Amino acid sequence: QLKTLENMEAFKKGGQLTQNVEQDSLGWKRWYSEEKAENADLPRSSRDLSPFHRLFLLRVMRQDRIGAALTQFVIDNLGMEYTEQPPFDMNAAFEESSPLSPFFFVLFPGVDPTPTIEALGRSLGLTEANGRFVNISMGQGQEKVALNGLTKAAKEGGWIMLQNIHLMQDWLKELERALEVVEEFSHDEFRCFLSSEPPGALQGPLWDLIPEPILQRCIKVADEAPTDLKSNLRRAYSKFSQENI
Image 1 (cartoon, rainbow, N blue to C red):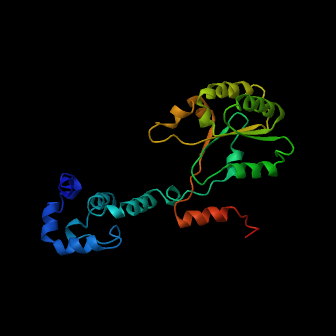
Image 2: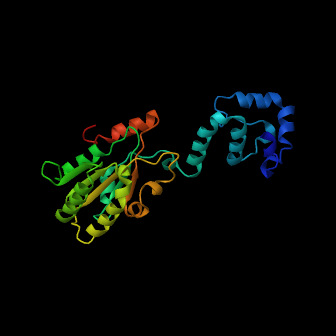
């Protein structure tokens, strides 16, 4: 793999890379042994490499550091916002929505959008208690209940949530048609929320699981669970207002 890099113009300036490694074995060993090799000085023959081409070296010689190096490269060239996703803000997403654009939540392990939607509904006076919010977990026998609830909510300005629609693939064409029909008379306060698990590795892309017209009309939300301590803390603090803190 190291030999293949010699064909790149950037690696020709300092002479043959493999030969340089052999001749300056101590320098390369020192660099290779660094805990954060992506930040350490390269041996003299390769010090003029650009940050981009340093990534190639790391990919070949220190694969364990390529993730951290790529993250830093993106931060340096595009900005921090491309590596640290802010916590999902349901209120901001709601401001961008309309009666004609349902929300489509992609479900991930450890993430349930239901409490967030219910909390927003309560703040706007839409609850299951007053009949203006309907939450249906899709399964056999729920097809007609869901379609009737969708029509009623659209007429009266309520909210309806249809969960796990991926379990009802044979019925989704009917849902697609129903969403088109309610557009003609939907109330300004009407909102529809859909949720589905993503397809497995053997199932192909999402649009093979959910009809493409449904996806095209929806505001799609993929709120994955945080994978590191910093992201977990950011999400936890986002649940509190400045007044509460």
